[in-house]
Length: 184
Image 1 (cartoon, one colour):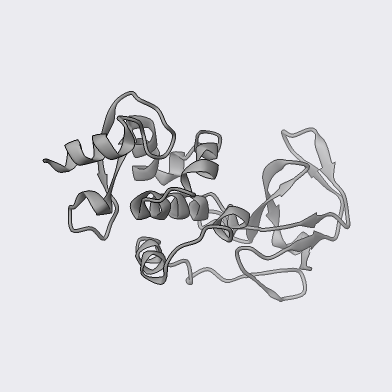
Image 2 (tube, helix red, strand yellow):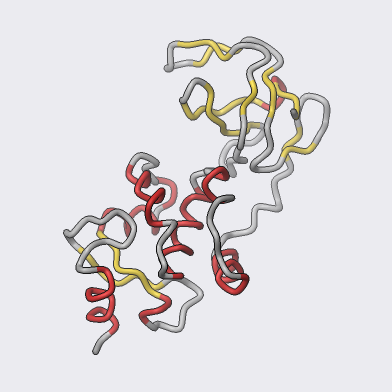
C-alpha cells in the first residue's frame, strides 16, 4: 500500500487539519523519513498557507482547535507548529505530546532568538507574556481606543515589525509599539 493510500484510509479522505474533502495531497512533516507516520493528508488551502506563512489566514486555521487533539502524532505536530506561528500560546500550552513528538515539533520551528524586544522599562518581553498598556492608543482601522491599564495576554513577537508585539485587544489582533507597554 502506498503512503497516499495509507493516508487516505487513515483520514477517511478528508484533510487532517480542516476536514475539507477537496484537492487533497500528501504533505511530509519535516524532518521526515517519507513514511505515512511522518506525513499528513491535507487540502490545497492548508498546504498553500503552510508553505507561505506570510499569507496565513488565522480564520481558516480555527480548525486547529479540533486537530490538535488528534491521535496521529504528525497531525498534532502540524497543529502545534501552526498554532505557534499564529501566536496562539493559549492553545499551544494545552497540547499534550510525548517528549519525542515535542522534540520533532520543535525541530521544525525556526529559531526566533535573534530578536530581543523590550518594554518601556527595558524589561525583555517573550512570546506568551502579558503586558499592560500605559497610554490610551487609538487603533487605526479598527474604530476603538485601546485604554490605558488594559492587559494584553499571550503576546507574540513578530519577526517582520521591529519594536512591536502582537496581541489581542477587544478581540482584535493588533500590533502594539513596545514603548507604550510594560510587562505585567
